[in-house]
Length: 445
Image 1 (cartoon, rainbow, N blue to C red):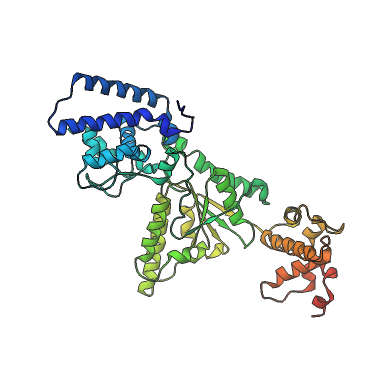
Image 2: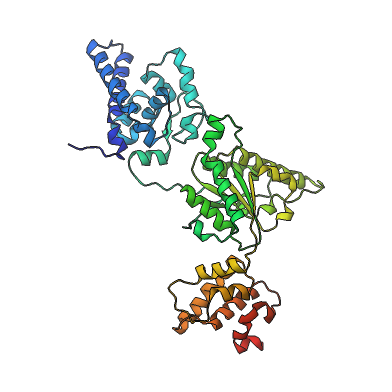
């Protein structure tokens, strides 16, 4: 005989499916005008007792969400049943003439559970967008109609069946695949403390809002500002990793449209898809949308302001962390500052921080000549973390191509290449002591 494991939820919930099957039989009998016999009623009571004992063990709490009411659990079992037991899907189709989907409607659930008039309102409330079944994304209610099928959310059905499930990226967003930890960040302690405070808004929301009665502020929303390469995206990845959630980078260029009303539609699609899902949303180049507002000179200016207002409204009601990044903090309208729970300024690294970055970003198993010391490199040139990463890898590839250890000559050339990417005139003095190790072809160019 098969024994259900702790994570084999479908098997552990077998009494739920047995009860639903018998409820369907009882409904078909009453529809045909037959009265239920005492034996039927006794069996129904026995099945209900088994279900009650099962629920007290908290199986649903592990697979779905804790704190659901008995009626909400009844609805959840009705909706999820066909995913586990196909016979329930065929039964629903038999009981719902004209419907081709194997899922129950609100009207059928009302009949199955034999709910009288005083319970109908409770059933409708269990299917409201603000109900736990919807906010936890357990079931999908496309619209409030008594004869529309109710379906389980794909992630919930997959978990119920013990299958892996990867959610598609929200429209306009791209998954950032980065495995990082706090040790990956080289920032002043004051900035690290602010990042930890941002996490407090997420970890302790239930206590502050639920137990203590604090205002539900949505989000939380953070603004990360600072020059390119100072670790803004890396910090967002660390926060996502700390939560155990995926990080999605939102490309505003794919959402903002020149056509009136389309930007709002795109934003709605993004947040609707992200609603209730554990994820971190990162909006790059926030200054492009939150720039200081000027005088409205034409209709397009007015619509641009409406788009910003709409985005802010959706962010404020979205129950999930949003991180906005910018390289141009001064370009952001100060009126928007109150919308952010945390504002973190990412500074350019000082010599000590640069030395730490060189130490971490030079490939750890790569052979190096004695002169290639992180402390020396940290004081030699003022690169950001992103620049140091590029230069460290470039130097490693130069050495690998020549099949020898990394030399100061490799590092000097790699740093020169990084500085000249900006398209400006670069003087030898900017390389400090590394300038003495540049190839002759560079010095006399």
